[in-house]
Image (cartoon, rainbow, N blue to C red; front, side, top):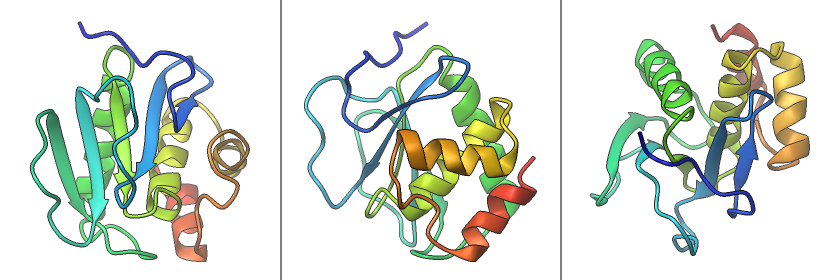
Length: 142
C-alpha cells in the first residue's frame, strides 16, 4: 500500500469519500512535492515516458476519448487506486479533459453527474468540463 497525497498538494481534489486525486496540466512544470505512483494521461498523442506507472488514453483536446470503453475502464482503475495510491489525472491544460475525468471519478464516488461537475468546478477548477459533449460524457458515465 502506498500513501495517498498529502493535503495542500497543488491541484489536489478531495472526493466526497476522502480519496484524493491530483489534476494538472502537462504544459506546466511538474509540481513540487511528492510524485504520483500512478498517472492517467489524457492526450491526443502518446506522452513522454515517466518514472511512475502510467496509462495513456487517446483523448484529443476539446473532444472525447477515442475509445470510450477504454476510458471507462481506466477511470474505474484510477478511482480504485486513489483509495491507497497517489493518482494523477492530467491533460495538456489540466482543465477540460482533466475536469471531465475528475467529474467521472466524482460520479464513481457517489455524486449524481450534474452534482459531480458542479463539485469539480467548485473544488478543482471553475472552467472544468469545457464542452457540451464533455458534459454529456459525464452525464452518461457509469
